[in-house]
Amino acid sequence: MKILVRWFLPIVSIGLIGFASWKATEPILANARAAPMQTHGPILKPKVVGVGIVEPNGQRIAVGLSQSGLVEAVHVQPGQQIQKGQTLVQLDRRIARVDQQSKQSELELAKRKLDRLRSLPRPESVALVRRRLEVAKVVHATADDQLKRIRSLAERNVISEEELNSRAFAEAKANAEVKQIQAELDQAMVGSTAEELAIATAEVSVAQSALEKTLVQIELLTIVAPCDAFVLKCDLRAGEYVDIASKREDSPLHLAGCAPLHVRVEFDEEEASRVVRSGNATGTIRGRQRNSIPLRFVRAEPYLQSKRNLMGHGTERVDTRVLQVLYEILPSEYQVLPGQAIDVVTEALPESSESESSMSNTNSHETE
Image 1 (cartoon, rainbow, N blue to C red):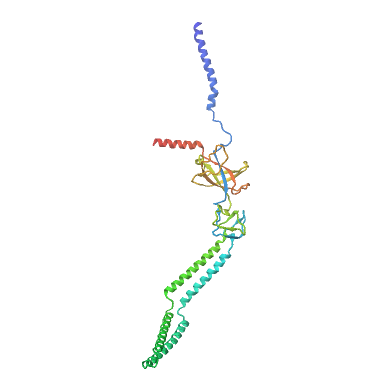
Image 2 (image 1 turned 45 degrees about the vertical axis):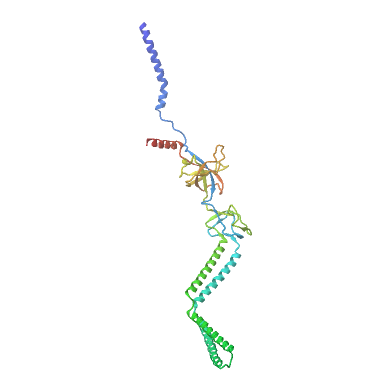
């Protein structure tokens, strides 16, 4: 009896304790063998937030004025849609037109001079010089005959020496006149030389260039649209004087490309590597957080620039650099205007994958 009590009771106690432990661990093992719990709802993808400024399609065009002048007429107004080649601003052209008439007259004069040289020798001019030569020869013959008569009389001391010298000077003058007219006749027979034609041709070219320059200046007084666009800004009035030499910081006339509009978004450099370069985004107008605007990726600027758009966070760094990404604003029921600031949310790579990739790169370098 003592042996039964000594061994049986401890064995029964150990069995009861084991049974109780098995019953306690059975629900935990059952849960471990069961299928994993299914989550309800979609898995949220990581996002990156940036600040964007709405801008025209393409770069904004600050239309320049090549000449100073008085504004004659302004043909556009802000917000107007314009076509390529359409007149925007007309400057005063009165002085330029007077200069055009002067240059036109100079060109006509140079052309006539060249035509006259090319027409040489002219028969009527040659005939006129020939008649002058015949008259000069007759005068010379008369003077020579009188000189011979005077010399014979001078040998007999009939006339004075002064009269003899006078007749000799007259004969020499008549002979020189004949030689001069003969040279003119020879030149008239030859016509214009190659050098004279070259000089006259150069004068025509110079006059033509001066006239073309004046025409270009007149054309520049009419400011036309370089492309299809709409007017963002027009700070010009008829009667106002525009001075291109003044230190004006901004152009008075700004154009923008046609629709659709773009939004230039800045992402902080800490998040730049996580931005999905080919993913779309969603924009919200400030003050209308429930109204979303669909955006489509266009391109990303490869060079990081200094941050300009601040979000207003107390922990935001001002001296950081940002990645600029350009998105196209897709059609929606909400209207946005150039220069408006909107908040943009886009897809991003998860931080875990980024850390894992950096760890793998570190391990690979250490292995090497």
